[in-house]
Amino acid sequence: MTEHGADGGRYPELAGKVAVVTGAAKGIGRGIASRLNAEGMTVVAADIDGATLATTVAALRSAGAEALAFTGDLREAAVIDRLFRETVERFTTVDVLVNNAADLRRRRLLDEHADLLDLQLATNIRSPYLCSQRAAAIMRRHGGGSIINISSVGALRAHHRGFPYDVTKGAINAMTLAMAIDLGEYGIRVNAIGPGVTFKGGRGVDEAERRVTEERIPLRRSGTVDDMAAMVAFLASSESSYVTGQVIYVDGGITAQLSPPGPGALEKDSRQIESLERNETP
Ligand SMILES: NC(=O)c1ccc[n+]([C@@H]2O[C@H](COP(=O)([O-])OP(=O)(O)OC[C@H]3O[C@@H](n4cnc5c(N)ncnc54)[C@H](O)[C@@H]3O)[C@@H](O)[C@H]2O)c1
Image (cartoon, rainbow, N blue to C red; front, side, top):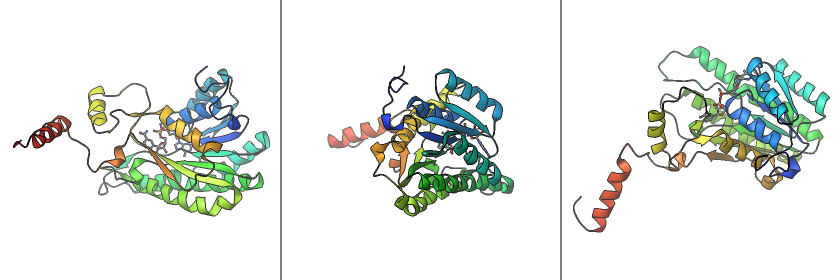
């Protein structure tokens, strides 16, 4: 097995608990579902894309995990109600909710995108809002839980061409803080992770472009789905039992820098620094 496989997860207290992960058919959500399963959790994997979800959940099950596929459009309140009703009927409770499903498209402000704005307000804000409300009602009855929102570095530092996506992720951060202080008395913690550039595998990646991007990241690499899932597992676990209302950026340091270096800038800077140290004119 892997380092956190079925023969013992990193957080044994998670074994047997129930997690709902939205947008779990592919990408970061699939990685989160897989990691929580590897911790021994029962995972209800929800997604609008039923065909991809079926393949993902079949793979989880063949690895010995307890996983249930729930297909539906989580923009619909009635679908969200059904998700939590079916989860409780089948598994009694919800211990962890991961609000991961989102629409990631980005535009310039002056490009017409009213339809995309409405779609993202529904998918990226209203849906996690309602999912959290439903999950929190169940968690309160069962003595607590952990809600983990998937935000973005775009909530803290704007992407170029970042509308309306960054605006929705800023709202997720505000929601994380507001829900944390409202739900704390019930033992429900609410946190978010802000992924940076995340390499999800697959084809169609321009390697030259990827190298240029990675030059701008202090840790000099893209994040992986496993990097994101590891932070989610920590926030789900009791190791983070005194952490609530936090947004943790899992971004290789990209949001820490004032401005990213351009191509070749790192060598130039160090040459300049060396000559300054020797008291020479560069
Ligand atoms: N990929 C990155 O580099 C990156 C960076 C920062 C933040 N994020 C965040 O991470 C999360 C996952 O991103 P990803 O790159 O894996 O995205 P993705 O597009 O690969 O996966 C998103 C999943 O959500 C599902 N989904 C979308 N709308 C839905 C709806 N209405 N109902 C149910 N399911 C729906 C999709 O079918 C898909 O399976 C998002 O919240 C995103 O904003 C990603």
